[in-house]
Image 1 (cartoon, rainbow, N blue to C red):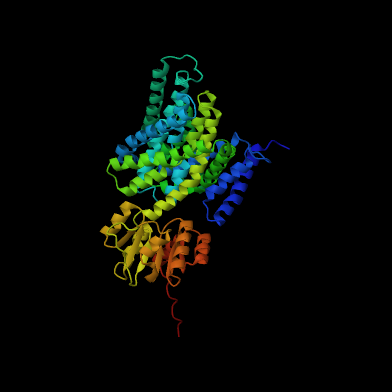
Image 2: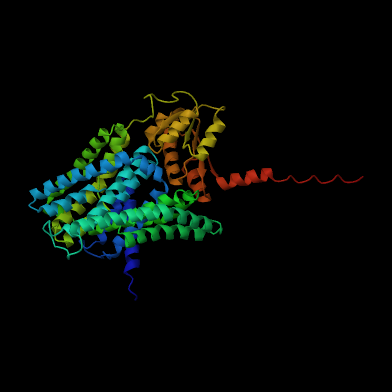
Length: 546
């Protein structure tokens, strides 16, 4: 039989992730819990089958690349520059605060200063996958809060890239293995790193900005969807790998810039849709790979150290971020979102821990504590967001319920479809629009409609919009699974409401109508009807001659 460790790792990872994810969902736990347990089961610290511990992290890295590419598609240069005044100083101060706390705990454990620095840095950087999943589930990516959180994350990633390059150069000074002598010493290594990052950004902004959209448009004109999908994936993975190989920056950062450049094309939404299935599959493998690295015996050997590590991640780092945002005079909702987003650690933490151990800066028990803190914080993070969802104001302005005790319609989503629906209903019935994105909510208000800013997946938001008294619910969000959850919540709140939902495929229609939608409409059908309406009418047959 051929050597099939790659196939076995993928099959075992996805298969067990599905099983344990379904069990977690059955008990109303985050599916991430199931993915992590799947990793522990196939890891080297539990009996039975052991997956390839070298292949799994590489497969997970592809998920991070695709995820950051998707974020870049929705995060323009203008957005990045708009949050630079808070994201850059905020991330730097928060990293320093977490590192100092890590050094303090390391000192109590009897470790060296070098170990404390590596330990603190590993605790300071949030997981890309966890943060973006939380923001995407709540449709916060394109909000002011989401832009600041993602910008903050990008600054953290850049700081970790510098740390990964500089640590080998200063290892000897901090008590670890000294590197081979090189030109310029520490100052030279720092200058080279800065030069590589600057060169990468320059190449992407000057050359990539012209080449990537041009390639995408040429492929789109071929009319081949398969070739377009392949082009998108080749650009995302190729730029990520090339940026790491040529400039020494992370895969995630390279993919983010590739997506950000592609966002300037009108084909960006189609590109995002094409990468979604692979992004979801490989992000599952990321969580499985984390579970594989976890030596659960550390929970029994060092329970107090584990709790202290977790406290730095979930409490210390979050409080620091919360206070920093308030210092910049941002609303409390922004401060709470940022603090919850950063209350976990992930992929860069594992890389730093591995480098620290290889340089003999960090003891192996330090890596175990980092992994324990990562897994526990990832498990806790969805609970923090649930608390955040309940604590944030339910309405955009005023603090009073909308459309109470009178018949009306509720519209979820104010994109292109939602806007057309709202304009069509303007003089026909009272309308309340639910929109999560701040800029669009302001646009709804300017158009003269009553607006409720929030996520309609949350039942309290639907009730706040007066769904119990509504006669019609129009669901115009593009994601069919999100639409299905909204319909479920709506039917529970008002079984008599008529629900008209947006769909993309026949399968979406079946899903939404089975859940409770009165009608689910496909865009292609409506386009066909419009085209037929404009087609020439058949000429009446001539009357028979008498």
